[in-house]
Figure 1 (cartoon, rainbow, N blue to C red):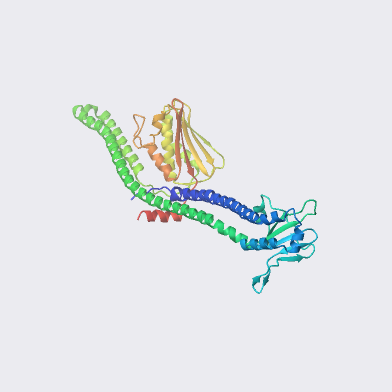
Figure 2: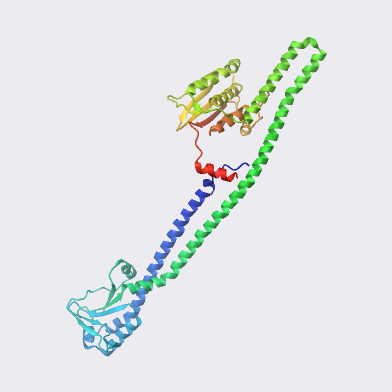
Length: 456
């Protein structure tokens, strides 16, 4: 059964690899950006919440003798300190300080019960003064290190040296609170990422099944097309043979009526038989498999051999063969007889193009690691609407042609993993060019295994 020759890497692997890469870049990058933005926003909210709660104590101490209040252990201060420690689980220290001394405000435990005394005097210069947080508090939280995260309020009385109320929080506890708040967005990002990846995987599986079904369907259509092509070719061959059999029959009848015309009739019959044999030989060349071995080819000798075979036709048309070749051409591994036959066909076609004088040019050049050979004439040219069909079997624009020459050329070029194309301008001439690799590309082992598996 015939299978499609499209590489599965082009149909599936490459598009889905690009899709997956794009998905990771867009969804993955977007998710990281979104997580960063949410994390920054959540950090700002968390710290702003701390500041709102602690700002009440700073407001009570502002414009008072804060150091005196702490030193005297005022009752309202004790109540506010207890309230803050009860409300903020991450709070570790509250300090009132100036540049000379300070007091630490923290509930005392006596026998497991909090005592009323909360104030502890600090040594001079024992504490660092942190400025009040601004809008970049979240950024500072993530950039700083250390066990405690600190910020302070200026609670100085008018016309008095600066006094600061400093709050210290356990960084790990704050980070845990932040992670808990971010857990929902993290889970959402992971969930949608997994859903997207699974969707791509499902689409890939569906595509693979669709390709397999398409390949099976395509194989059936190829069989049908091949049968139709064989039928059409056979019908065209029968038509061509009948065109030559009709004159044969007419000549035989004429021979019975006019025996004196025997020499002329025999010549006509022989010509018809030669043409019949040529058509049958060309049809066999088109359909049979070539078993010729690949060998190193001298390109100059190859073109000269083709020129010698085509010389009688060129001479009859008053034309010559001009070979233009690059220097230091390599010796490619080709089927010599097959390529020579292709060149002969092209040169003969060019000689029959209607060119009146001059030379048929054969140009040989090296293009990267490939060999390009072009045959050009200055004949009548080919109409644009006919260009798409000139390589079809039995299609010809000449009354004396069988339409198999260019079809055979195309088959030979394709069997060498090459490409052939034609460029023609009506009234100016035609240039047919084929491009061949110097050696056949080996079929990859993975493709051979895949092809073998697909044909089972």
